[in-house]
Structures are given as structure tokens and as C-alpha cells.
Image (cartoon, rainbow, N blue to C red; front, top):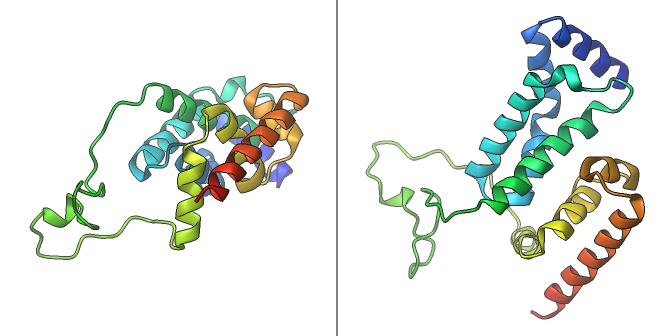
Length: 187
């Protein structure tokens, strides 16, 4: 995989846009998953994923081919997600539930001849609940927990993505896990 990715990146650096489309195809799901798990909103996650690929394309010349491309790309999406959370302003989305109702969304109030397509959502209630609790963690713990347990990255990769020493990553994972354990056991 690494040799394939390096070959694709060489082609991208030569100006081959189709080669970059191959990179997007390889990583689009992971990039979206990281951003969704960080911000907890389908629309924002899609925006962040798109911006991450745009930034990767615009800055491909700065990518060090001696390192893993996925680590570089995941660092971009993680940083964009953290930036979005810092600048978070209340937004309204069509799939947002109307307060005081049970399951009624703004989208359900729009008259349409055809049924509206459903967004990709986590189907199991337990996953929704855990995801909601992860979203309540402080950002520094949230990013470490997501990268370790959901994206299954090594401590070294997380260290590179977050630009932190491995000892700090371990501490954040431990503290995030403890905070999550407390949140989950208080229900």
C-alpha cells in the first residue's frame, strides 16, 4: 500500500489530477470518519473532509515522502476539526431535531414529492450513545481517544498527527479513557 501511495503521490506532484482522485478514493472514508467523530455533525464533517483534501492537494509539495501519507493527511483533518470546534457557532441543519418534539426534524417539514435521501448515520443506539459521550470530552482527550480506539492508530502515528510526545499521547488517552469511563458509568 505504501509503495502504491508513493507512486500515486509522485504522479500528483507531476500535475496528474486523476492520481489525486485515486488518493481521495483511498482515504475518503477514513478522513470523513475522523472528522465526523470529532465534530459529531454530518454536514460539518463533509465540509472538513473536503477542505482536508483540498489542503492536501494544495500543499502536496510540502509532504515528506519518507513519512506515511495517511499520518500527514489525518493530521490535516484532525487540525481542521479542532479548528472548527474552537470556532463553533450555533448552526441549524435540516436533520437537526426540533426542540420540544420527538424525532421531528426541519427536513421533515419541507414539502417534497419524493422521499428525501437519508444521510449516513450510525445505526446502533449504543454507538450513538458512546459517540455522544465522546463528543462531551475535552478536545485534547477526544482527539486522542478517536485516533487510538476508533481509527486504531499506533501511539507513534497519533504522536505525529497531534505533534505531541508519545508520553503526552499516552497520558491523554489514559485520562480520556478514565473520563469516558466515569461518564458512561454515571448513567
